[in-house]
Length: 414
Image (cartoon, rainbow, N blue to C red):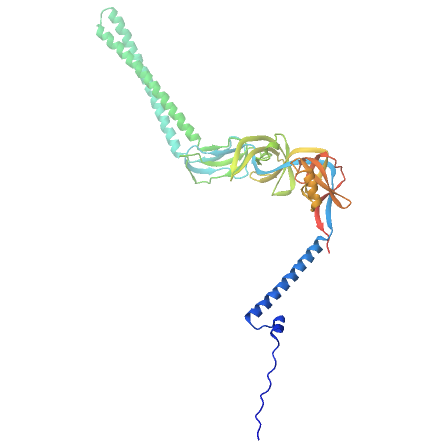
């Protein structure tokens, strides 16, 4: 008798409590709880790492860079840029229109006052002068004719007067003779006036003709030539510039634009030094000769023009060069100096903040510098004076020369 086959026993599933404890719940809710558990663990780990790193970094000792206060000279300067120009520069133009016939000078030629620089075509003006000369000669002839007519009329008037006294002519004939003399006088006056007009016309035409010769008004050097032979010069509305002459390039002027913030420090007769791009390693001396009152405004920046006298015996400097100048506005001898970095630094920490609250905030003149005492920053109140941008004069306080002052902070390298 056959027995029925027994089904194999199914494996027992773990208890639901154990599954939840192990985070093995296969439901969506179980999977979400496992994910957030991992996130929380990672966040706690990163926070611990950050706290450890912060404590490690803050526990490193601070190192301070120092520079000693010193006794020395301080030169206060104002820096400005400008352009070199000739002291006397003349633009030579033409008062008349015409065609340039010849040009006798070129760039860099040295010329003397009165020297011919160029000729304009003068054929039309020469013809006009000849015409005026002929008109003048005709006017002179009319004057001579009027003088002869007057002489004749005067003689007739005299005879008529004598004959009238003897009653040989009538009153009417006497009056006719007298009127003829008067007309002859008037004709002579008119002829002489016409003569003066013709003479003035001739002078004007000759003057115009002379302007076809362009001459140098001063002695100097030709720094610009704007014409060529055959070119037409038109002087209808404004005088065309043909040449530019510089009187003497051994002495020049430096035109500087001084910022409005620095103009109060600048005075005439102050010394300056400047450099140009052509000679960057060389410093040229200059002296302020004039300060212009009129302001210049460019893109909202207000400047004032200063003129400086420059010696140029070697002719190294040329008109138009851009110069960067340092004007010596003040010079302090044997004063106590500190680096500007020592006035800017503020040591970190609550102790430094407490010191600053005790001494109060720094003002323009009342400042603090810092020194190390037993490894801790200690402030020294000082009164500041002039500065050149790198060093500052100390005019008051207990600071002495040679004191190491904090200028920067650096952490100890691992």
